[in-house]
Image 1 (cartoon, one colour):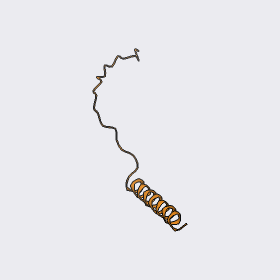
Image 2 (cartoon, rainbow, N blue to C red):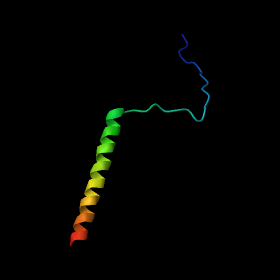
Image 3 (cartoon, rainbow, N blue to C red):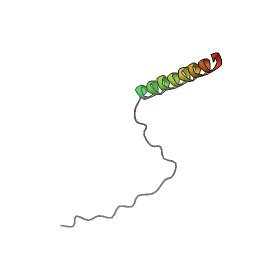
Length: 50
């Protein structure tokens, strides 16, 4: 019984990789960006008052 086979696979550039995550990932990114903007605004406001 021969269990070895030769399979030829073509290399096609430009294939798409499936995305992982989902809407929850984008929500976390959005909250993080908003938190960074709020922190930067607070720092700039404190520097302006001193």
